[in-house]
Length: 404
Image: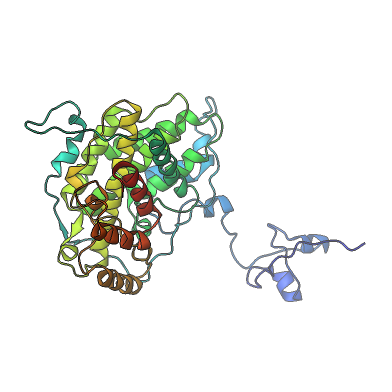
């Protein structure tokens, strides 16, 4: 009876042992002696050094720079679990090989000199938590009334964002090219999210403590420049969404203080600008400036959605985000997903041709005297036709609140 064999690729002659290579036969590549040499009772020698084990080879991502203090904790479970022979800690789960979830662009990206316009009134983002308690003189604000099903919809979508990192992707408020530029905050976030979702039973306490310490580091760390502030905000926001919607039982990481910290980080990011100078002028910006500005806008929208759900769950009123009135809505799907400078410039040229009257602003999705007018609906339809899933989700939430 013929034996069924699993097909596999022929090993390279350079990897074969010297005896199999000389005999021109398939080598099993077993170490220290291959099966063929053992069966023939001959000495088995290799010309090359013993390759590293799969565990070591998978220890760190090829393109994500993870600091030494965290790399072993997140990517080599054996080093984490064997802390002490006397007092063993719960075993952390072995992670699959960490890979950059997007192909790196052909050219080098330089984020050293992004050109953004500071956001006027950014301090309103920082002080947003005070609005339910402080009445504005001469102004009567009406809280937004979310339908329970709308809140369920928002929660359902938001909780999927960190899980995308656990499946070799990124949330829609992180531009894929950011994962190839060595941001420590995002590299740690990528590893910790996978650790959170792939944890072993019994390791909940150490996993939650590790995430909490990283959140504290981001909250109290000094960041300089738009790109560092953006990466810190994106990572902290991801942790908040993950811990709030996929919590570890009995270990709450998101509370009022956490949300105030998140608002402070959003303020710092917005203070540097949510739009590039060229975008305001109706021309094409540098790709790097656009990546930072566009990712900031998306992170800001995601933060406000999380804040709305959190406030509703805690019986705190939500108010219209007037401070974001002039912020552009998420860009077209093909512009956001471009993976090379040439492709992005081509898609952005199409974007400019599609919007001779200026890009859609998020406030155009809110209720106003123009709501339902032919001109307003034409602009919204034009935007919906080209936006991605994140934009469609924002559109759905705004329609539930303000109509169309």
